[in-house]
Image (cartoon, rainbow, N blue to C red):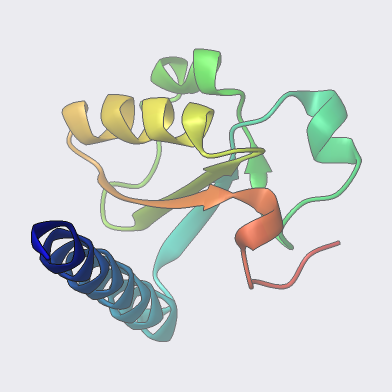
Length: 111
């Protein structure tokens, strides 16, 4: 019984987080004041990317401190690992950042 309760609590917490993230992303998109950055390699970017996304590999992200701090930076990669690293770096540099996670899970228009 204790396991069932713990699983139920976990499901509630997890679903609550994803809904919050989704509504936050919707708000960012509605405001239309953002920059999308694909933090994968150039080769990965060339196989397909979000329309209008800049390609700045995650290990070069700290070299691009000239991004507009008035805009929210949306980052993504192949699996969500590199975008998590880029998120932390940009956040530490004072940017407003949202981690979109894995490319295949993004619902934004792709090319």
